[in-house]
Length: 160
Image 1 (tube, rainbow, N blue to C red):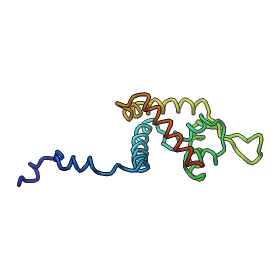
Image 2 (image 1 turned 90 degrees about the vertical axis):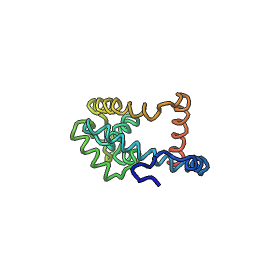
Image 3 (image 1 turned 30 degrees about the vertical axis):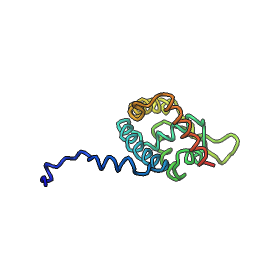
Image 4 (image 1 turned 180 degrees about the horizontal axis):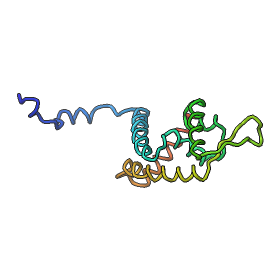
């Protein structure tokens, strides 16, 4: 038997055959893995800009949805209202959002993206573009579009 330092780390034919016959992972498991990997890589890509993933998500929500309450930002960002309050307070302090009274509901405060917030969002998107390109490397455009279509349906189905 070879000492451990000399053993090959290449998979044997038997190991490759076993991998081929193994049951495929559940789609939910694969999507969960992708979510964790994306969170890690997105956090790393955004860090040099001085913005957290939660802040980027909130900016994205405000751009897509327009002025929104803290509760709506929390719901769309998949964080608690308490966490959203911390996130939006930090963003307001940096001038990325502004708070204003809801003209239709006296007790609700709306959060609105500022020009500085929109500019930061553009910087974030530029920083994340290489990650998306890496993820989609070798995937035909039509397949990437189809994957996005189905993922959006999955999200809609689970939101209820």
